[in-house]
Image (cartoon, rainbow, N blue to C red; front, side, top):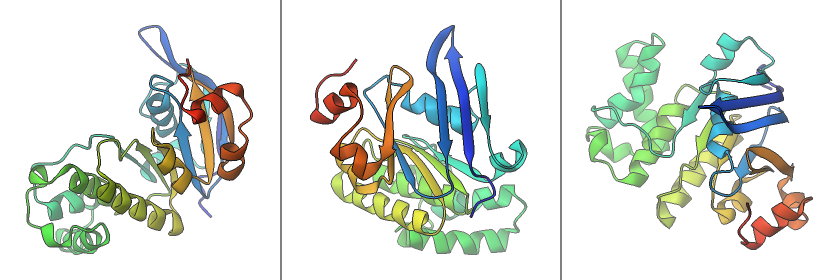
Length: 237
């Protein structure tokens, strides 16, 4: 079990230009599972993930890991909806996070080849990352995040622009990562994907948590009228 958990969030809030983006939020995350964050556009999903990951400034409250902050930062990763590709080969993109931590070039490149196979890019090692398709780029971003074996991985709608086949491949990678012990916290606008992946669901509205629970309970009988309306496909504000 990861020494990072539990993650305890107490009254946490982040603002931009005087506007509250998310919060106040109270949340506790344990070491296992896949937490899926859902809610309408503008609900604060991305801001919540950034707050938990530590790349959004905390305006109030606190986010506390079970280990010290420096260690927590080293043991987590973030995959963005539109990942940035280094102007290097697929192999060198994958090796880059290891090189940053002092791993020698030969070892890093060898591990990169292993992870290229794991994410379905084994035949693309020498291709420029900038020439990959959208689905291939997202697979590369996942491999680049997972190659350091993070304890927790945050993902901001990683399948938003992918077709069905690429989405299926990405979901398989995520399931494998969760089974290997990486804690996943992911936002999505796709309720089918949420149902397929989630062990628990957090429903955001207006920057606040309006509902939360185990996936089977949440999808069968959400606690709030807003969550029920959202799952029906109604416009929720």
